[in-house]
Image (cartoon, rainbow, N blue to C red; front, side):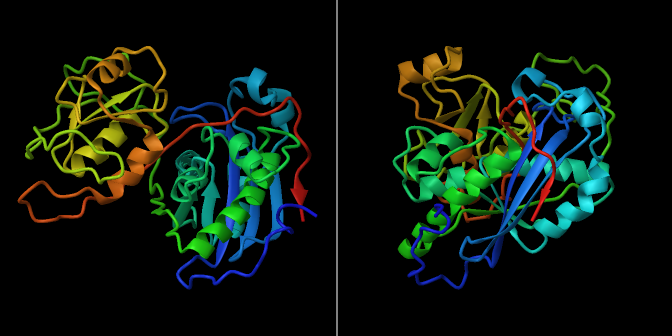
Length: 352
């Protein structure tokens, strides 16, 4: 009996919960905008998290496979695999009408949306659910937010860790008890809108006259000067409280969402994006708080609150208006990436 079969069904199911889920894992050639999917797996679950079927495929990325020493998928292995347009219809059938569930879902969704855009198609996904965000909603006592920690918490055994098919299976087995716990306790599921790309260009953005490139990670648009924040700084962020317009937010290290896009969403929400950390900084966002960067060091010395990117994107959903201002809902943040390594071998495509 697996973890998926060993859960009680004596739960009063909230009517507002989704009617089906697609638990997804994709493996890629890297983290950048022009990186490609090399394998994908989907477990379809019903409204209570029971497995209906699963599917797996390799995908020919039409380019160098990237870090073969991590994922083990060589050019020879991928040469005979189908191109993404050849699997897009079947993937669409498995995503259609379901909430996409993934571990750090902003990455998986971003890669899928980009592949569909390249193929001049649109993914049918309308909502996604990140299991990292759900574990935080449930206050699970995890040492970190790695998939292996979530799996260990629920007693799920990883057979081929960091392989798309096994990662999707492990996540499906961990998601079902999480879903039941949320339903039992009346927890709101952290659902986010999926905004599909409607056009795609593989060409880099053309910089304006006089543009000087920076050492920052490449983006699909050039950097530009943002207008000054119109709101006064209300002070530091208090854990457990919402963000407030005017707060000064700094970012450090790699982000799964393109940095400029993440900063744009913060500005649109009424926050002040700071390029450095000072005593006036309200919050530092970093996925690696233990890194020895100048920003993390200054944040530690000043006592500046530090949160990770996933928590920040959740807070961006409902930023409080500046003191004395009339609430004007800010647009939801639009995401992008992180990836998991893949083992040296890959199983053949599975359909059941």
